[in-house]
Length: 102
Image (cartoon, rainbow, N blue to C red; front, side):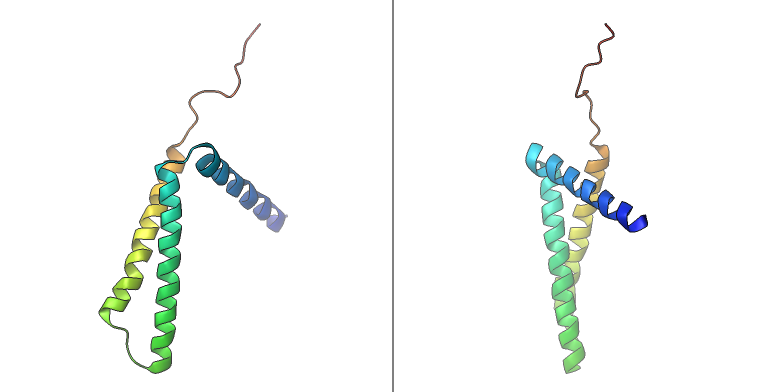
């Protein structure tokens, strides 16, 4: 049951994020999500590639190379944390349907 629950929960969360932040209302949270993912992915891939090259050649990476990999990871993580903060703060204020007590 755990894999099935996890898969369905991840699918519903993905649908909610795509619908709320890309289809219905694109705003600051959308920019934070996209830019955060791009920067984090770039930093991890670039850092892993340079680390692998450094391990193969035996030449240590320069400080600039390390910072060039670490800075996008830090900024991307901060943007994703800010997106999560906006997502948690995003609580509906008006109901989708009026409840009349006729």
